[in-house]
Image (cartoon, rainbow, N blue to C red; front, top):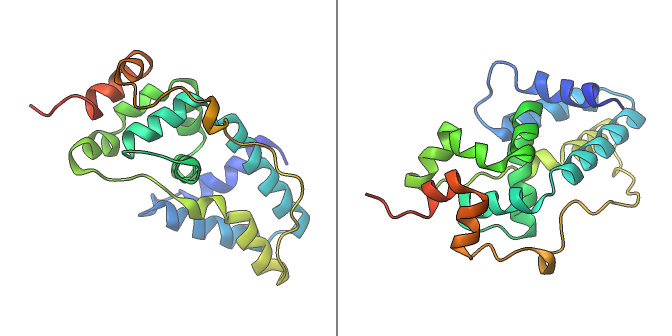
Length: 177
């Protein structure tokens, strides 16, 4: 599966601005369920590639700040939320996670405490495959999609957080005025 084909499914699922990442996931599942099972598996493999590419320390740190903490599952679910916002959002956030401070809902989360997770996006291929075939999607060898927790820098180190993610730190670490 080509990268453009993978993102085209997400683009169609985000057409007309659905209300939530869950709605994006439902639309993508519905589309993929009508595809050949091999295409669904290929789409799932491409999702794993996106997860590998987005599995950076600084993006994890951004998720940690934004969501008031993020363990492994929380980081994965945050990236599911990000994927539901499309290719440009993922690319920008991977390249410079601090750009997330410019996203209106994230700015608002500094005051509201909203959490950004969409685990259902990560299950699109498996659900589509099951709908299409009535069977569970074959599980192959899975790549590592994030750093080891023991290898991360200390996300509770506010000075390091401010150095790496100054805009997000200003939103989420500074006391409200």
